[in-house]
Length: 426
Image (cartoon, rainbow, N blue to C red; front, side, top):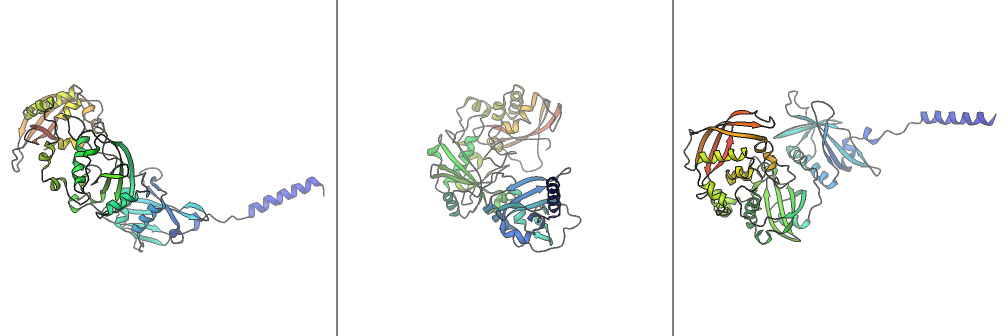
């Protein structure tokens, strides 16, 4: 047989054998949850979208944190399918597991869940019930893409003394504490954030005062236990904040993330309980009463405060506008719509972009007092305000005349009337 023909026959035979050879199917196509569940090292969570493929919102590769979540998943008892009238979310879970030294991904399993009730997970052998605690913690984890089981053992031990268990570390920060707890008229209330939480720290024998103006490290942790009952409905949002100067813990408290992070001490006590003071009595000591703007606004009538607020907006002077608000209202800017990977919003800009800074012109038309039918509080006055506004972008309202309902409060005996609330209805 000619050499060239022999080579050709060998090539054809090789191709024919290759076509007939069957590769073993990949493990992801055959393994069931029961077969790989002891080898799970990660987890993926996908949410359904109205159009297109499901969107991945969790891609967890931390083995220790994954196993902790699986503890919440429990034994997954079999159950009937979800009711046909299911009104909750219809999403997907996938699991990462090791096989022959490789990390592989399972298929996406249908996962039905909703607030305040158990969920459903469809595995190879049918539907299984998912404990509420798993669903709750999975939803919270989706807010923390940098979550890690790499925690500081000393922080863990310190929190454990007070009955709190670290679930995972959310993030670490390095930065400077404010130079003082005193708050100046209209400034962003970072000083009040630390003044408030320092009261919570004092409840466990810590004090930030000697460290004001210094750079510190702050570790933010998610907790396993719920916050005390008085924090309902935000008990599951509990986080622990640990402030360190080198190896020394100098501050510690619990918070509840957005939209109002102020919570309690590690002993579960609120600021009012620790200090024996109301908010107004407490905050008064941290106000610079010698500030000229502070003194000026403190002497204004409620109507003049409203006028000054809109004049400041009209003149592109947001600091004066904020100086017309109560301190209690100012600290809400720390947490409104906050990214939960932060301790607080970094400036007024987060909220002002859609409100004060969106207004290009403001003119007050009329101010009229009105009285709620409820009990009379001598430290509260309410007004209906008609104001003509021009806006850059239509967000919740267009340019033109608007009606706003103002609540003004005499927050402390010395600071006069300030704006405590602005709404579109009484």
